[in-house]
Length: 209
Image (cartoon, rainbow, N blue to C red; front, side, top):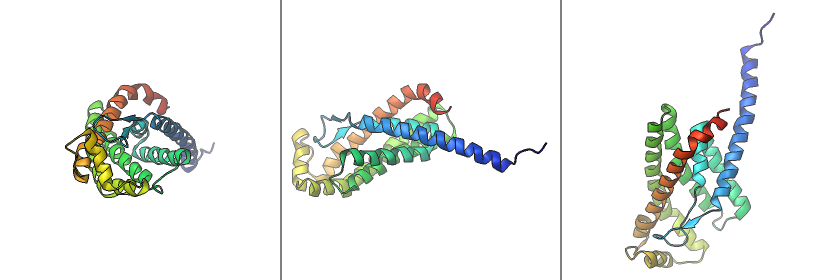
């Protein structure tokens, strides 16, 4: 009896995997978008800094399905946000937020994927938080805050003044990034990582089916 070729078996397996893979990515992206709507203002930053936990879903997907899946979930999340909320920055702000999210998720998922363990997950998330904080700070300083200033018709001095109102140490764009943007990304990364650690062992069996 003739055995089916390996190429045929591989192709069939690939198709089944692709359907399941995209279905999981779609579900995680939808959950991520829902989490974005529950944003919370912070006591140490101006009101335009609001934290959400949408990266939890992205991080779980990246750990379970691989770093590329994390990028897909992040990208779909941003596209759905554009569809549902629109944009006031011609998509530049959303693009930058996607880059910031990926800068957190990609290092974490890549390090975890090399040797899957709780210790590697913690190490990966720690490095991801640091990378996100640095990239997020630079993007805010040189791209996002200037764009928001134009989009909302607020001079840079007004953005800085909004920061000064909650923290007198904020007196310039640089100190706004240092005392508001950087702590914002640090806090978001830590909270997302802690929640991921708690939830992952319960959710990952479903994603690995």
